Image (cartoon, rainbow, N blue to C red; front, side, top):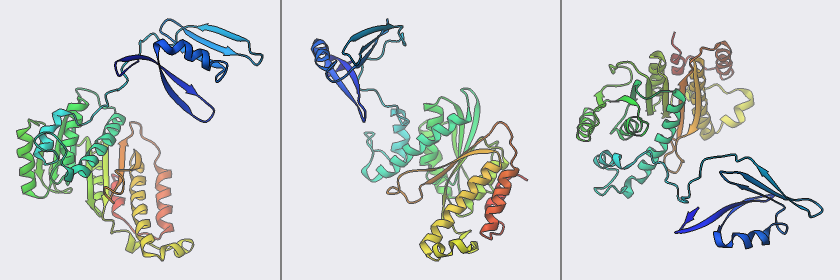
Length: 347
């Protein structure tokens, strides 16, 4: 391995409670081995492209060298500093600058660092979810971002799908504020994002072509349920939501006797209602035939609304009756009436 213009042998030292790495210059390897083997270590394994060599010393101090066939024929890289894969490379600077996240030199503005961090984390999650969808190059897909605001994340998804993952994706941002739609369309045109457009509308009324993926981040209260329902009814392969402003369930929440001592505290009741709301949403998605994950979006110091639900539609249909019964029992336990999340299942 080459480190600071010097060729070294990189060694992994395995001990009972920890592993450590030590880089020894080639001209010092022999003396280092003589000092370590039999005194510190009783086993050593040298792997090369022509053969592997195992050195052992038994309990009586007798050394033994055993030759094995090479486990790999590929020469490893000698570069120590590996280039970190970036989801937002230099080709993203134009739209990042136009949206105000970067300055004219391509540096992240200090005032936008939290938003940029959220964008990177969000795209990391989306990239994994897209991989679970099994979309291949050349396959035409349509992703819709409901309630996209200024379009930070919408531009990010377009960039990820088309420039980073090399898919063929049309991305549509839906926003009720006309001035934001016009501004985002102007930026998309200026940076050559031909397969990215923004339209005026809301989750319920926006006229859209087929939906392969639906995203709704920070949709308030039952708007999250409306977005999920539109995605499931359209047969979307991918659904990603970040719920916000949970208001529906709490005033309807019954207090089972065993939980009354906890739910008498307003803060605990509020947070429990949020968890139960999002838990029911995740269960409804599973009932609709999706593999669902509930994860942390970003750390709470960046935003308190940091829960994300990702759902990928399964290719094979499954018996949903057990999940339906679990949801029924859960709602009965808390004496819950019909909720907005009940609309998620296509009827």
